[in-house]
Structure formats: C-alpha cells, structure tokens
Image 1 (cartoon, rainbow, N blue to C red):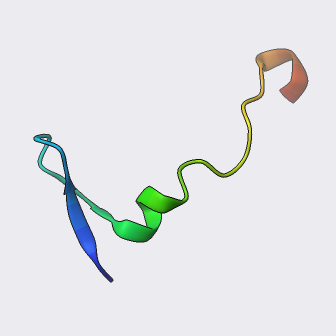
Image 2: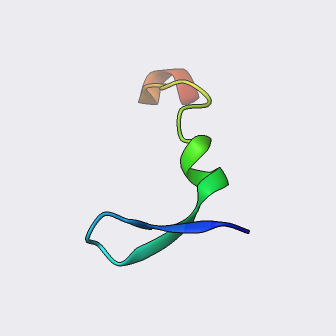
Length: 33
C-alpha cells in the first residue's frame, strides 16, 4: 500500500484514502433522522 504524509501534520495516509475523499454527498441533520 502506498502512503503519503499529509502536509506538515505528520499523519501518514494511504493514497487510496486520499482519492476517495470526494465520494458521497453531504447530508444535514434533518435528512438523517
């Protein structure tokens, strides 16, 4: 698994995880209850 460091935070994340960040949509609290 390929990983990268996220800015200067020191967090190491997978490249796949970075690429899937935009899937899905936002929902407000009323829509989820």
